[in-house]
Image (cartoon, rainbow, N blue to C red; front, side, top):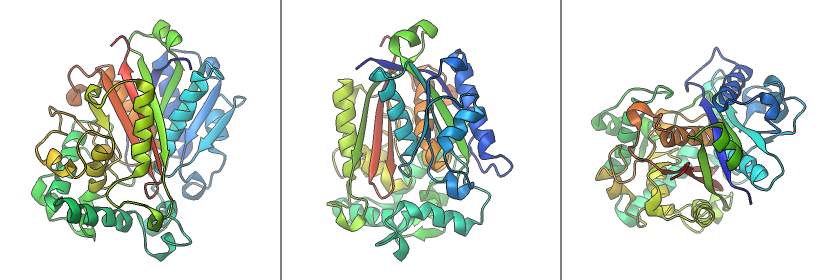
Length: 388
C-alpha cells in the first residue's frame, strides 16, 4: 500500500450551537480543512462523512452527498459511515485506505453531529439507539447504565476507586481549559467532581461525556504529494479496526473492550512501532472508567493498573503518556460523528507543534482511539511527524 499523510486539518468550536445548522458546521469544517491544506477543492476526488444520527437529530439522510454538495464537490463519490461513537474514526480509516490502495490521490474525511436543539429526553432516546434495542436498549440499558456495569466490575476485580475515576475527569477538564475549541473550558476541582449529582452508580454528572455540536475535517493524500505541499504534514503510520458483540450479554469480559484490543494490534502491526514510541494519546473517554480501561486495552499499562496510573499523574500534560490533551469527550465534548475526526485533528495539531498551551513537547508519534456503541466498534490510528 502507498504511504498516506494528512495535509489539512480543521475543526469548529465545540458546544451547544443551537443557532447553527448541520449545513453550517459542515461548511466551516470542510472549507477550513481545504484552506489549511492549501489545495484547490477540485483536487478532492471523494468525500467520507462520519455521522451517527443526522436523520433523527436533523431530519437529514444521505449526509455524504449533502456534505459534498455543500462544499462544492457534489459530483464526487461520497458516503456516510455510521458506527455510533466510532463513526468519525471509520470515516478517516476508509479515506486513508482509499488513498493507500491507489483508488484516489486526495480525499476529504469529515465528521459532524448536531445534537442540541431537540427536547433533551428525545436526544437521549436517539443516543440510546446505539445499543441493542430488541434485547437491551429497550429495557433500560443505556450508555450510562451499560458502562456503569464495566465500572463496578473493574472496581470489584482490581480495586479501582471512585476517586481514581474522578481524577480522569479532573485531568480532562484541566486540559479542556487550555483548549479554545473545547465545549467546556473551565477546570473543575476533584472535590466538586466527587460530590456531583449521581447519574448511574458510580458515575456522577462529571463522569459522563457532553452533548455537543461540532464538525471536524482532514484532507488525506499520498505522502509524496503531502511533502510537496507542506513540510509539517502528518503521516498516517497505522490504522486498525476491531469489532465485538453488539449485545452486552454476549461479551466475554466486563473489564476489557475486545474491539479496542484488536484495533490496536492491527494499527501497531501496520505502523511498525511500539507502545513506548507513542508520545500522546487521544482515547475514548465517554465515561471516566472508559479511559481507564482503554489505556489498559491499548497496551500502555497492565490490566487493572489504569486507575493507579491515572492517580499518579502519568496521563496529565507533562506525564509519561499525556492522554486527551484536547479535554477529551468530558471537556472538549462528544459530537458523536465528529469525535473520531476531531481526535485526528487534535493529534495533527500536536505533531505540528500547534497545540499552544496544551502542547506535548517533542511529540513525534501520536495515537487516536474511538469506541462505538456498547464497545462493539473500535478504530485506532497511529500518526507520525514527517521526517521523524
